[in-house]
Length: 203
Image (cartoon, rainbow, N blue to C red):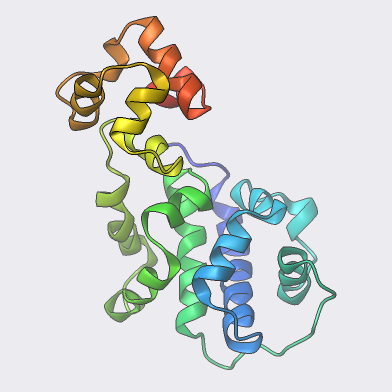
């Protein structure tokens, strides 16, 4: 599997993101799903996704948190022991690196509050075991269903907007027909309706 950056940089992103989640939830009393979505939609998440040292290294977790929420940094001490919120951020950073996808994609499949429910027993396991939490959800035969759901389209709505027959869309999503073998016109119609590229549909 191809990763977005080298493994030697992984500790930096895992620790920093764990501390950010901990500060947001424990000190600022933010809802974990609210903060997770705020982070995933922020510019700083892009820096974490490729371990951009310029925007991460040398900044404290308080300063990084301030960049996410758009406020002046407030300086809090980290708890003596890692909390469940820390584990969620720590584990998200590992799985983003492992699966080489965006934080938004991970959280779309498994919200942060659901990850918290997996704190027991996964926090006692090696971090590599946490990939099991996402494996089933990320195992989609093609991207059509994922992209459709992100747009909040039903299958019928996508059929109407794209002009592709509903029966075809159902067959593509079930894997009965390989989307990659669809005609160029069909792929263009679906990509246009979903505001994505043809490559995003079939790769």
